[in-house]
Image (cartoon, rainbow, N blue to C red; front, top):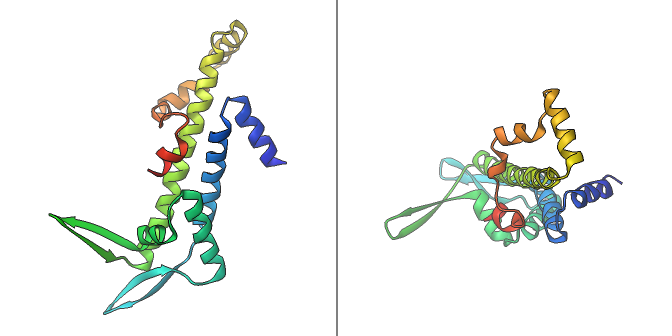
Length: 175
């Protein structure tokens, strides 16, 4: 029921079918990322992240997240558990701690969610701007502004209009 209302809301602001699929995939990816558990171990005297935990739930979360993000499972695990350093022409991969890997997982989820939110705000703003040429909509916006309510100016003040290009959720969100 909530999903149907969400899809209807996206329809009402003119989000294409492909973009709706990308939005829902991004939401699902964020949710699955949160379920990825990192397995730690000792490397010398230091605790390091060894990879995604082997529990069925953590493995499933990793599989689903990777598919939704359109990357391989190993690339996702490496992005979370390794730090890559390029020095001159050499590239080194160093293990990070379990805590750092968890922070990387959470940061990835936050970036996806932030870009998704910016895309949705941009789509709503475009819909509002397109309706501003309608005299009825312009009068309602004028009345709202007179009461000190201006959602569009608030989102613009927050810089949301500078989001990635519409229609490019999947590529810009993950690339």
